[in-house]
Image (cartoon, rainbow, N blue to C red):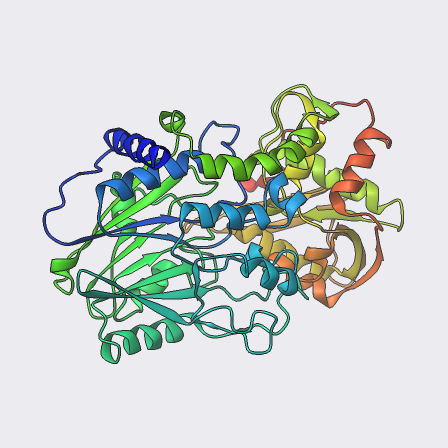
Length: 517
């Protein structure tokens, strides 16, 4: 009892650190705490934000101050740090259980090790697992997820649905075997209507992993405007920080549905840096008012609070992570942000070099999304290299026509460019609506020819049409590396052509706006 009391006292003390975290329990309330896209960020990140021990402190303090608390997760709890690389999702599930997650949905990265592995990991999860628009009867996930759940608080019934993205084009082929995708808007509306009309719920919460406003896809904003009977959408996938304290955040979060009724849309960024907090007034449900909403920074203010159960769980895994983080394999003369051209240029040039070792290659194409974190100045560890490029991809060489390669570049332009090797330049004009219109694609200084056959070094995920680069699927893979991508990169840095050389490349973007030419 002493330990429990001490933890309760600490949690109550932390309440005073939380902005706008009121102790006023007048009326009937439901506090919904939400996370999304943690991406295995168990420890605080390089910016000293996030960390699951800090998150536990905030969750415990909110629970200590409120009678009704619902903790939910909107997907992509895994993939992105050594915890997932070494332990395959087990750590994240243990953490979610200790945090007391009540309900969760799948993100696309939950499928990274395949449906069989995911099915085994989900059996460790204590949370209610929801998907309204995946049919799973023919998959290894059969029987593990529910189309919706209903929770009751102070006599009010709250329905929770789960909306997932189409795995085709974003999840590696073979990793979602047997999963059947159902249309987002139609399924969400049908499920919400059933909950309100047949099950007599007082509010519907949609947990989603479709992104806020993805290019060419249906996201939370489109779902909200085309919905009926959904009161709150708690999103993920696009890593948007929707902060109601800013005018832009307030405008993005306060939307209306087909009937002109309010829909609150929220999302809390990525890597556990923030915790979302939605407050439903249970007495005013159905009165067309927006719930209260805020974001709580997960930072060093909460470092004094230590949960013994969580600490014991993490200790058994941290030694393996630490060992890889202290094994130096390369250096950098200055920081290499994954949001800047130099790192993606270095990576693209490496892919071309490696591809050329087992096939003739004309150019290389990589995706920005494959580089998950930045690299620091100075010594770079094996763990940091794996964290940067954590996916179990293989370098492949694809042979395809120029017209199909042009389609690949058009998709890349839609997301403001991806990685290309140093012998390639893309010249574009920016239209009034902000879209990029490609003017020229130059390979070795020559215009791309539609009927010419090119060999492109890339990764197998993209070669198979991943990241919506379907143009690659009209070609054929003619050669592939026998090593996983990060092992190829580690070999290059420690024994290959990159040995004893600082990591560097051109700092200039290879996507050039017409006026800059």
